Length: 259
Image (cartoon, rainbow, N blue to C red; front, top):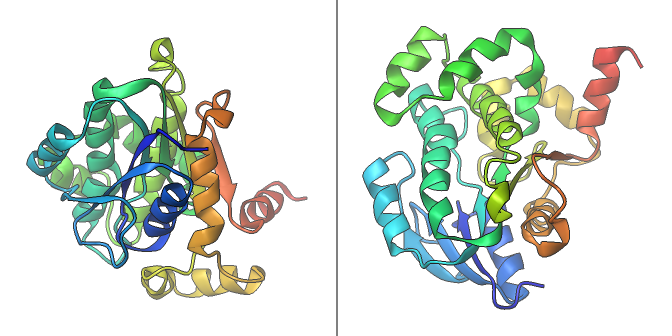
């Protein structure tokens, strides 16, 4: 499926990123595995980068070859980290990398952003002012932005995923003239090294979600869906946000709308 394809995977050292890198490599992709830490197991060529640092991202893009066929934006920080760091990596750094890499991507390439069930609130009217303001957000302004919009604690993670989903939707046709498409995948709770951070931060809410689900997700549940959206078979899917969460999104929708 991926023979002759070059795919960049961020967050490739662990969790969903590592599973996605391995899944792609096993199916013939040349994987360029990006992370701030070296991966525990090799799946492709490792490139170190700090997605909170524009200089580091510029150096990464310069080191990447021309003709990249896919970008899986999976790197992210949990809500236990400082709010400005979470927004910088999960949103600002992701967008910065993507827009700078697009000129080096092949026509017909695919971009997949790892969002989250935590971004469900993107459609609520109260979320719109901050999401709109984030369209022009750069690294230098993250601290002031978070202060201005009351983004602190766990809210930083929720906001970063809300804004990421909207950014994906808005850019459904941005690079259509070159056939480059962008979509998102929204997992629910997944058994990765940062799952404990979510339970610790969200407390009773997270515990209720875990009781509702038959089990948390596994990285191997998410990786094939990311890979599908990267593949040529998904060429007619643009600007979509696919929930991969064991039914939690449907459960929440039914609750919200009284069904």
